[in-house]
Image (cartoon, rainbow, N blue to C red; front, side):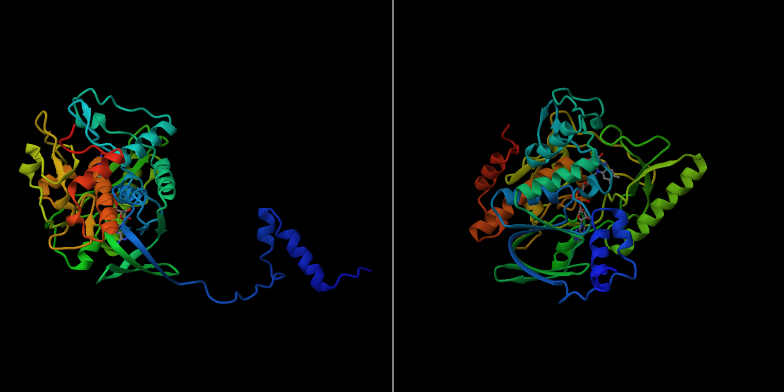
Length: 422
Ligand SMILES: Cc1cc2nc3c(=O)[nH]c(=O)nc-3n(C[C@H](O)[C@H](O)[C@H](O)COP(=O)(O)OP(=O)(O)OC[C@H]3O[C@@H](n4cnc5c(N)ncnc54)[C@H](O)[C@@H]3O)c2cc1C
């Protein structure tokens, strides 16, 4: 007869079954195992103080956060999705451009560092920037979107940036030292006290919550759902197929839900018609246009197409004027030699303190925006906003009052190309 008590035997069984195998895990959930109540609840409320809060970890946002972290600012990056990269990764537009113009590189810095590392690690290829291409997209870079998202996380970690996925701001109020931003996630309420905010949500959602003016067209450009039918998708080598999602609107969870349902429904119809297998589907629609801020400076299409060098320029930009309509797009290339610039004033909501934006929501008229919204330009602005915010936090001032020479010095130190200085 065994001298084991029933309790001993149960504990032994639990220990051996919970060992290392998946089978053990499955069997341990039988009625033999008694779940113990967990003492106390999970911490729902988190309060923290940071120098710079970046909201939105997309194309511009992750670069802004890495830059702020590298400049020594205590930085938190809040992203409502599950990964970094935004339209580049979650939207599937893994084709950043344009880093070059008229035979030379005009945007570099952290965005380029990330793209370059991604292509090299993935064994991909680069276009020859010394050669002016016949079509602008020939000098865009194919990146592996999966790798890109992970490398962005690694760079955030190395820069000391804390990431909070699945969270978004619920309310914001100004404080004497900056902002109090209350964020929500599942099982988490986070109160952030920060000196500077960088809104990289694409549609200037934070700026809207703060009550500053934004602009929006009655009819916006279509979004697109990206997918692949037939053959297997080869990330970093081929672009995904795109279907327009007319009326796609990134403003809130209801409009994004509608766009995603519409996009997926069209793809289902297409595969039924073409009788092909669905080999790849992005989880979210890519949105081309929503709100833009009204900034201290607004870039007009004339500024853009004439290559105006703004006095407070912090980054270059380059792309044709590229407005998509119901019937498609006819890009209008810039005249030879033209390189537009982005002023700091276009990243600062008019009359604001301690808030910057970076990305497609910068202050610009619609046609200028159709060229400025592309990824290399968003990365350039992201880095500039990261520098301006971190210096403002350090100096105890607002971004508009940071001396431009200091911004340029920090940008150059971090590999960026300063407009008009090449
Ligand atoms: C279909 C399509 C094709 C395109 N083609 C090209 C191309 O070939 N080459 C090119 O260079 N550009 C292209 N563009 C343009 C370019 O991709 C985008 O304009 C650019 O990526 C926008 O960057 P962003 O940082 O402003 O926004 P996004 O990259 O969209 O990032 C916004 C981020 O903020 C997060 N977010 C939003 N709201 C909140 C919130 N309230 N709280 C927390 N997080 C939030 C989102 O989840 C997202 O991660 C294309 C765009 C589309 C849609």
